[in-house]
Length: 344
Image 1: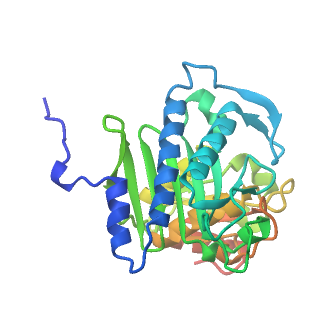
Image 2: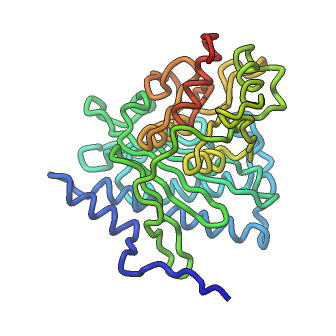
Image 3: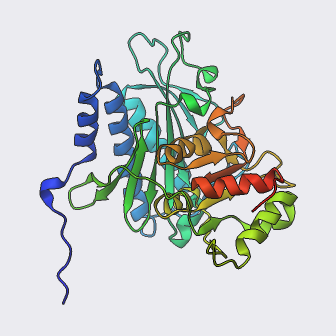
C-alpha cells in the first residue's frame, strides 16, 4: 500500500499568519485591511459549514423571492448574504457593501472619521442553483478604498473602475474549500483544513498558463452569439496537431468553479452578449472585476471582447458585461475573431 502523502508541517502557514507577514512588509500599515480579510475568511468558513449541511437541514431550494437580478433567490443565497454582511458589520473595517442579493448599496456607518474605510462588493454565493445537485459553488469579493472626498459612504463611492481595486478574491466550495486572493502583488491560494478550522497556504504565487486546452462557454446559446464568436468556436473545435486542437469543452455553470479550474490548468471562460442579453449576463462590479484582477495578477487576461475589463467605468452597481477571461494567448485569439482580424 502506498503511504499517504503528508505535508511538511514546518512549512504550513495559515491565512492569518500570511496576512500578518504581508502587513509587516508595508510601511505604515495599520492592520485594518488585514482585519477586513480576516472578517471575509470567517464568513467564508460559516458559509462553508452551511453548505456542507445543506442536505441535512432545510436550506435546499428557493425562498420564493425574486432578487434584484430578476432571478429566483435560493435559500443559501440569502443565508450567505446575511453571513457576509454580519461578519463585515461586526468587524468594523467596512463602511459600504454592494451585494448581488440586495438592490441598493448597504452603508454600515455614517461617520467615516471613526469607522471603516473600505468598500466591499460581493456575490455571496455564485452558482447557488447547483447546490441542490452537489456541484461546486463559490463566493466572489472585491475591495476598494472609500474615496476621501466622500464624507459619508454611498453608492457613488462604489462606482469605481476595477483598476482601482485594492484587493479581490474568491472562495470555491468544492471537494475542498479554497480561498484565493490578491492585493496587487501576486495571487495566493489557501485551502481550509476542517480538522483545525484554518485556511492554510496551499497554492503560493499562482500563475496561470499562457495557453490552455480548455474552453468554457454555454454552447446552447451558440445561435445567439455574434458571428465572430461562432467562428472562434468552430476554430477551437477544428482538428490541428500543431496547436493541439480541438480544445476540450468544460462548463460547470458555476462561474467561480470554471474560473478556478482554468486559472490553475489554463483555459478560457466566455460569457458573451446574446440576442436576449445584449449587455452580457455577468455583473461587472462584483463578478467580472474581481476575477479580472486575479487573472491579470496571475499572468492572464480579461476583456469584454474589445476592451480591458478593469478599464470599464461603471455607472450602476448591478451593471452587466460580456466577459472573456483566462489564459492570455487564448483570450487574445478570441478577441482577434471578435474583431474579425486575419487569423493564422
